[in-house]
Image 1 (cartoon, helix red, strand yellow):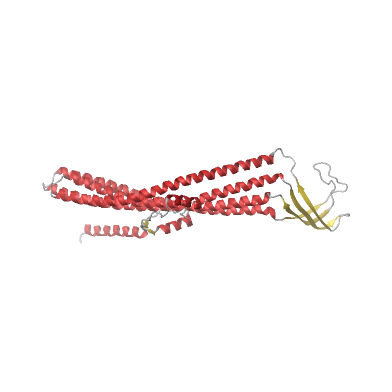
Image 2: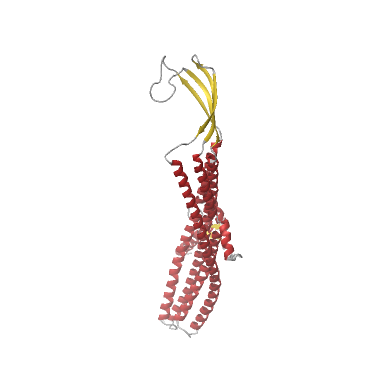
Amino acid sequence: MTRPLTLGIVWTALILGAQVSRADDAVRLSLREAEARAVDNHPQVRAGHYATLAGGEVVRQTRSAFMPTVLASFTGATAQDGTRITAGGLNNPTILDRFAAGLSVSQLVTDFGRTSNLVGSQALRGNALEQDEATLRADVLLQVDRAYFNALRAQSLLRVAQQTVDARQLVSDQVTALASSGLKSTLDASFARVNLSQAQLLLAQARGDVKSAFAALTAALGSEQPATYELADEPLPPLPTDDEAAAVARALRDRPDLGARRFAEQAASKFVAAERALSFPSISIVGAGGFTPYHQVGLTDRYSAIGVNVTLPVTNGNLYSARQAEASYQEQVERQALRDLENRIVRDVTVAWLDAQTARQRVDLATQLVAQAADAQDLAQARYDLGLSSIVELTQAQLNKTQADIEQATAKYDYQSRMAGLRFQMGLLK
């Protein structure tokens, strides 16, 4: 065996091995697996979950006002004989030598609904955060579905481009051979080469689109490292059995972003009641007790006291009335935002429904177009082989077939993407 032949075999084996290795490295992925991976890993979903947990802690903070407050104190003091505090504050000027330890307790009795309304408002805002988390999850799932179907479309178009190159390469080789034998004109060979070059440009573009689609899918999954995926094709979903009005009604019932807006409006109403209660008294019980192991003459070893504290606002420069008015206006803001979102949901569901219907019709029409273009190409090839037509007719038939294949692949995955959008608009993507 000669040395050049040996080197050629070695290089061929290395190339084939590299191709097999790249194929093995491709990550097998179905749509459901992609959605599950995104829900587990995507930073938007995680951020929404942490925001929900933080909202729960705010509720606990607000509810703590119902619980007693207990403080432990350790105090020691000494002063020279005859010392009196004569400046610096309104307090007892006498300083007694002592060391003492004790507890002070304060318990709210009632503030006429302010704290309870604040707790209710924060609890509703926590519910809104839960709905926001569900909205983020649905949005991430929509991104994953669209990126997944876009990647499938890019791969399908790559196959169409490769098949087009192979078919046109065969025609170009045949026409070139016939032209060299004088059976076809050099013009035919030139047309065939131009046709082949166009297919090669389409193939180069398709390869780049596949890489871009995989990059978008990787980002939608919440991953940082780029990867090549072996995607499982999904069957065409049927159109929803509900009519357009039922789809709108379901969206108004199930959309998490609309639920979040409703909770926000209710929370604003609770906050108005809480701000109104600022003008009412606040009643609490306070107590203190402890022991004084070291003290000067005149003090006892132990001490205790209990009392009731009533705080009644008299005047504060209209601060409370302004806060109440602000809360009322914010309630109106939330109410109008809720109405606006409902209107937009009705519009979006209607548009998504019509888009899905149109996309489904395109799938059927594209299938018919492919069959018709294939028949036309076969007829044009036969006519050209028999010398009954020019290569222009064959070239046009090949172009029509390629465009029909592209339209079929585009229509199929566009319909699946539109259906994912419709499920999102109806609140079904969770």
